[in-house]
Length: 417
Image (cartoon, rainbow, N blue to C red):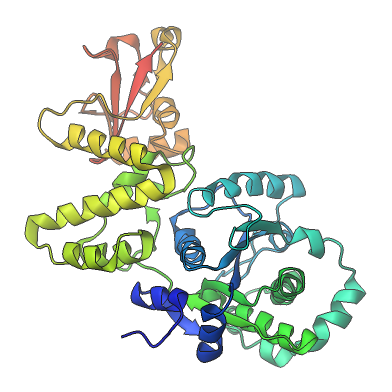
């Protein structure tokens, strides 16, 4: 039986999101009456989000499905500092051009999960550069800095750990808490936003914003965090041997995305079904009850549901067909992801490493060479041992393509045109 009466908080609790809440009873009242408005901030450190950000996106999705209004805050301003939370050293500083290009890529990740528009519960995207870039230094000190004490700031986990280890913690990074807190105050003033959501590593920053809204404007504001997700074996969620599991299709194909979820550890299946799909609790409990080899059916349900949310039902079905073709009877390759290469370049010969990159099986030729060195790269199911090996037209199989494999579970075709 849920301790909450609001649909939003009940959903988060039932599905295993919630870790910390600033004012549980008051927040429950707020979410149960009217249209609750909440935001999550995303700094633009790359041109795509990865699965590690999916938990936050799903919280915004559940907010909207329960009648709330999500605000996606792009960190065009805060990215110029870089969030130091849980980092052992300063982030590299990005240019304005890099940040804007990253924001353009990141925006794509939200469109499959949220409905955007001008309606009362439609999601909106805002950029904190709109207000942070216009702030003067003296203005920051007088309006924001007066509400923060050094005593509290140095107690934050990241600050305390860096200082204890005698690692540099720059004055630039020290200001991140103030500016993220100011984001909450600005969204409170502009959009009557009263709730900030985030991962539990953001708890200190969220408390700063809640406190600033109260001190500066006398407003009621709330914070809620979700658990940081690790796999049952202790690994970091969204990290694989070949890199991050990106959400944008040009960084990680729907087939590879489907395979990521299909390869979930047995002990994580039920938890991930709750967190990363829209399946009902009843259906999830049924899938959780599967044992032995039948657990694979639950993993396929997870892969299909998660891939459908991001890439659509057709892409999920195609990915499942491709997986069945590779791992099922007959080993047909027709449904595998395909990269087209000119026949002329194959006649001249192209590096196997370059072909792996072109097919999306590696992010760079250097990464592809590492796969070869590890014995994890195959061409037409034959292991490649030479890092400078070349593909030619002679490698084209009877079906008119060349099959590339990275490890046992990731495959693609090179097709001459």
